[in-house]
Image 1: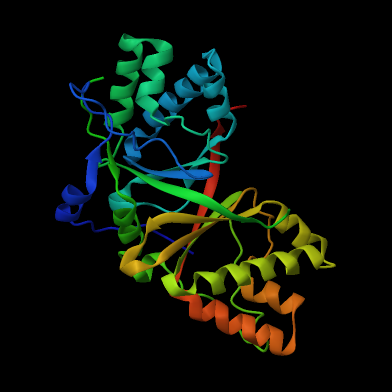
Image 2: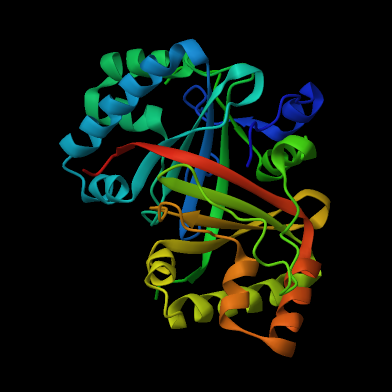
Length: 156
Length: 161
């Protein structure tokens, strides 16, 4: 069984491979959001500080409330297929791995936690929650996205 | 929204991370001969499981053929547990390139059938025999670029419920 996912991570690789997903309001036309899944399913791996899991889960609770509160049907569709899990195996440097599984994906919808919180709860509360959320991430702060296309449903 | 420190890691880098420490993260695909299919077993200790399979780019057709046969074996099994396993076992492919040109196939098993063995080799051996099993075994093992990662997951929340 997998007991840990990664300990070492090259800083050079990170700097080369990462993009800031939720940066300041763009002055130019926005690039496509990395939080929009193009396939049938999506997975996000979140590496969270061991002493910040309560904060992370609190914000996720608020996200759940926000999705339920939203009057947009696309938010309901997102909620319906969005589960999140905690990995039994410890992550790098003692981080706790939370896994978002979106199955099915709501086509064309953005799975940005921060943007959803701000949209539904307003800028003040949404950004405060998002700060708590982002502060819970371990160093380096990573939301690792995997875009997935269904190959087989073995029961159908 | 203000700039944040949360980044999105490009898929290839994610897969490199997952492959970074093979001794920790990966197991070889289970060897498949009918004499040895009883081991090793693949039993999840959690309610949900994920398996990452890194497949050679030129062997994806072979891997998908084996997946189809796995589906046949599960569905035609007289063992009720196998049908229960099939009901919650989905197979996905990542369109993003993996390490060293491999292709990522992900098994998402939600929920896990408690105590059930998810070793593909064992299930195929139950459903097929003789030359057919041998051919499937070879295709399956030869399709792997590296090994498999098994991740045990505990549900925290369903955001829609």
